[in-house]
Image (spheres, rainbow, N blue to C red):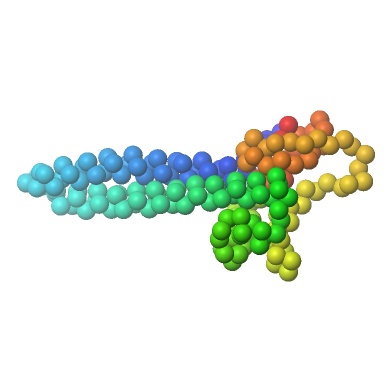
Length: 174
């Protein structure tokens, strides 16, 4: 059986890789730009300078994108801790905890749901709440246990002796 990685974890790794790639390639390109400026007598120095400057711009874009992804993942972890540990599902309460406008939180949560950070979540705009559907029926005779997700840190219930996935980020839980 193939275990799926959650979108949140994949994006966190992608953010780190983009940032590191941007810093390393950017630093190397900057060194090349300095040498190209210093050696203006070489044939094609201006063309090389333009190429290296374009590479520097692309590296800055990679760094900014990676930073944005890492910040989104950090907010995701905070949302999960508020939702799972404090049973906060009201968008107004989440916005108050973050000190951000409700509209920002709504858009951020909608973006995370669209990007599949939350495995089974939906925003109920009528009641201004986020609803996490665990997919478990309360009338079941199976025993449940509380888990702590190793990926996002959320707590939840799962059936004992079963491999299931985190209700918030979709990571496998043993």
